[in-house]
Length: 79
Image 1 (cartoon, helix red, strand yellow):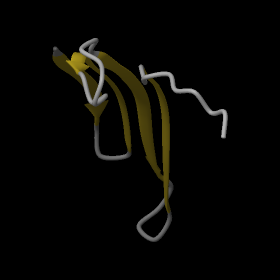
Image 2 (tube, one colour):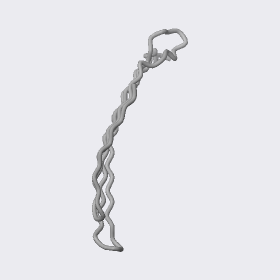
Image 3 (tube, rainbow, N blue to C red):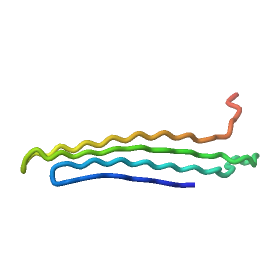
């Protein structure tokens, strides 16, 4: 499942925008001796802004946060 959304507003001097997205999968089994699926989930939010102070000076800012979780097969680490 995948989804995203964005919203923003702007004029000649300034702009502001927000984004969000998410992805989720039940996964597949990669273990040679197993059949359980290893899922993956991720989501991201972000924002951006612009402010024009003059014909020669413009400030731009961007911020993004991402969080992800991946299921993995356990293994015996005894050597």
